[in-house]
Structure formats: structure tokens, C-alpha cells
Image (cartoon, rainbow over all chains, first blue to last red; front, side):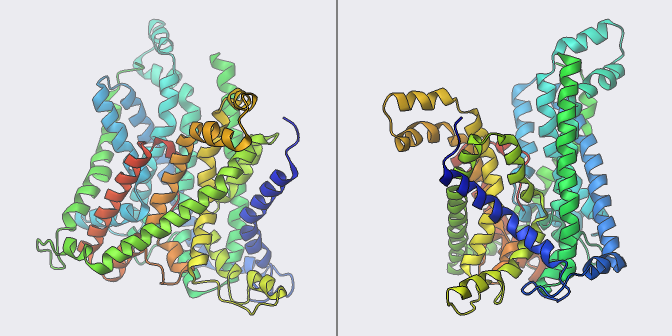
Length: 266
Length: 271
């Protein structure tokens, strides 16, 4: 391909600038000793210090991370088992019905998910707080895990399983030594996506969180409603670094899993 | 068929019943209740009153504008990305901002569009008075488009990436102009990506409530804001559920029109 015309490169360049500008704008002013996002007075780390001194905020961060890891783990287990189960369904109609039901929560607007879960939890008596938030996050992450694992299961050569069985493997061995290693990249992808769904969720959590419990998104929302606070900017600086690390980690794992797969299975 | 493992389906099926079927059933049930838990059609009558119809139309109009501008900006970006040398790498760079917490990105615009913020300052250079950009329709649509762009780029990029380049060469060899090639060959062959992109933009745009509250003040009322208002402020779950029922119906309609079961949306979701 020859070099792209100048106008094309300018367009892409402007897109990148526009997409990143708000993020760097936030991070830039997180080092501002003045209290605003308009005029930069002098360099300071006081807003970062404020984040680490604020125990309430730290508790919220820990809550957010715990919810993300737990919901990621639980939804990955249920989703992976579900995908394995779906593949074993022979009835085509039943299978496609289940897949449609699977996608309902992916396409539903978050407000609707949040509102309907609020009704559900109130009705069956789940206290609003840690439990309700965790259950909701597990619930909306399961379908994405299924969607990530399913293609791996479908592309798997059934002869592999027959071979393992012929060679004397038990059903359990087949699952843990053949199926799971094969679909591992899908499981990883599902887990990472579940993690990001949970970390990023605002609307559903906002509905089902009670008074005493908060996650980072909900906390930022209530802070931002009050007005500008450079503590939020410091949080964005930290979140940006963590996010980039997670993205890089994800691509590292995804690529490694891919090359491993090639080495072992082809 | 890998292994017979019906047992592994049990937790998954419990999930479907409890968190997919039950919530929808509950929303429909609650939409038929008044404030005292008595059966009523009142909520549905209220939805067809002038005030709610107007709100629904505004919500659709905003969602349409947001989707339109997002597509207008995202399609050329996706197209140009496929022409770059390390397109996968550039794609990752385009996608990274979409992984940053949504609340933080929205919050940034509170500063950017503020009365004495950078945009105002730039306009000041051209001799304009400081203006309040925040809490206007423009700021709302701009921020929403900003948020949705990466999610629109992704499916279109994938569609363009799969496009066989020899078809484009063939069209050009047969004398089609650049525009004709685009209109008759490239665009029709990537329409599936565009449809997925419209899905991931239009439905969330109808139900936005966080951006509305933070960026548009309380001016723009979308279906999402109305649901949040009814559930968490007015505590009128019946009316809130009725609006939710219609939002679900609109969602189904959009999916029928764009003709997909939503599997094109995997991995991309906007709150």
C-alpha cells in the first residue's frame, strides 16, 4: 500500500488528538496546585496524596477491585460451564433459544437491567449493598464469558476427545486435560472482559447499591455532581495507568495464548 | 460433540431464569401496578399523554443525532485505519480511550466546556465572550458522540478488514469513480458492521442518564433519565417500569430493523 494521502493522515491524527485530549487534560490538571481545571498554577502531588490519605476513598477502591475480581471469577466459572453445556445440546431450536436468552443482558440498556434487578432484589429480600452489587455484576458478565468461550468450543476437533477417551482418559480428565486447555484463550478473554465490565459499570451499580456501599464509578458520579474536585483528576491519573496496564496485559495474554495454541494443537 | 455434560448447565440455567426471564417478567408486572400496588392501566395511559410522547420523541431525536454524527465520524476513521501499515496496533490505540472509566471521561468535559474552560478560552482568542457550553444540547451530543466513537469504529473496522481488496480494484478497473466504488461496493459490503455499530450506539443513546445529568444539566430528558427519575427520585416503580417496557420494545424494534441477534455486539458495551 502506498503512503496514505496527507488529508487522510491529518484526519486520523485529529481523531487521536480528540480521543485522548480529555484524558490528558484531566491528568495534566491533577498536578495543578490551584483548585481549578482552567489555569495551571504550579506543579504539585498533593491531590495524589489526598487520594491515598482518604481512607473512605481507599475502601471504595478496594471494594471496586474485590467486586471486579470476584464477579469476574464467578461469572467465568458459570459462563464456561454454561458454554460447555450449550455445546452438548443437540436440539438446534433449544440451543438457539438459549443463545438468544444469553444475549438479552448484553443488548439491554443498563438502566433497564439496573431497574429490574432493583425490583428483583427488593422482592426476594437481598439487602442492597455488597451482595446485590456482586450478584448483579456476576449476572451481567456471564453472557459475555459464554460468547467468548463458545467459538473456541465449536472450533475444537471432536476427535481430540474421542482420542483421549480411547487412550483411557476419564470424563473428568477429558474436561480438565483436553477441553479446558484448548478453550483457555476464550476463558481468559471472558475473564478480562468480565473484569472490565465490572470496573466500568456505573448504571447498574447505581440502581442496586444501597446507602452504605459504593464503587468508584458511583463515587465519581456523586463527586462530579457537586462540581470540580482535583481529587477526581488524581484518580483519573491512577485509573489511566492501571487501564493501560490491563489492556497491555490483555493483549500480552491473548497473543501468548494464541502462539501457545498454534504450538500445541497444529 | 465434546462431552455430555448437562450437569454443567444447571448454574447457567438458574442464571437465565433468575436474571434474564424473571427481571423482564417483573418489569412487565410492575408496569401494571400503581403506587399502592393495585392493578391499573394508568401508567400506560400516562405514557401516551402528550408530555411523555414528547419526551419519547425528543429522546429518539437525540439518539438519532448522536448515532448519525458518530457514524459520520467513525466510518472514515475505520476506513483510514485499515489503510495504515500497523492497523491492528493503531486500532488498539483507538480503543484504549474506550476502556477508561466512562465517568472520568464525562467529568473531563465538565472542565473542558466550563465557562472559563479551554474551549471558551480558544473562542476568546477569536474575540468571543466567554460562553456557557456546558448544559447545552451541543455539549450533550458532543460528549455522547465522543463516548460512542470507539464502539462504532470497532465493528466497522472489522467489516472493512474482511472486505476483499480485489473487489475494490475490480470496480476501479471497470471504470467506477472513487465515490461510486464506495457507494456501490465498499459500503454495501460493510453494512453489517455499520448495523452493529448503530445497535451499540442507538440503544444506549436512548437510555443515557449519567451524561444527561452531568453534561446537559436537567435539560435533556431521555427515556433513561425518566426511568432513573421514576425509580430513584419519585419512587414510582410502576411508571418507571412502564417506560422500561417501552424501552425494551424499542430495543427489540431496533434489533429487528438492524437484523441481528446482538452477537455482533460482543465485547463492546456502553453504559
